[in-house]
Image 1 (spheres, one colour):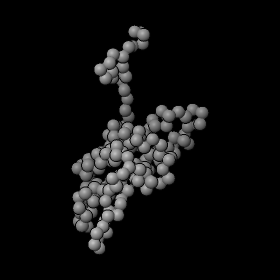
Image 2: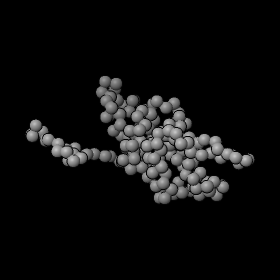
Image 3: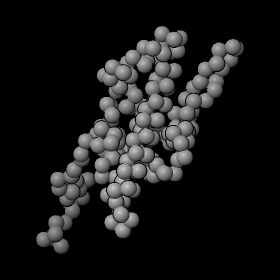
Image 4: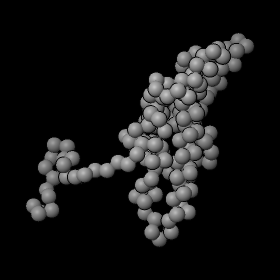
Length: 162
């Protein structure tokens, strides 16, 4: 997915936890705060973003939406089409975020279906279930060469030092 790097994909996977707990894309959108809420006055019906839901997940979707609005032609066309139809910039971005939420739900759901059919129940461990997800979201492979080098200010003893 354009605009979704490895860290954003990891945040989405971590905050979603298990996609199977959501019965539909609408339930997932409600969880991540992109489900529209009706908010109108007068005769013009409009919607706004929900302020509820998982804010970390919503922030990840926001980063993807801003990047796509800047660099991805189909997202730019969607925003231009919505603005030409009378929506404001925030309303057009809300619609883009909801569409991205649906795409992410479908990618996570398809990856889960693929993993459960490919692996036997005895060999399936948590790490194997998520190994192909960055590719499903378009983020590419992520690897850590030397975990001991990431000490965060503390010395990590090596195997021969123990």
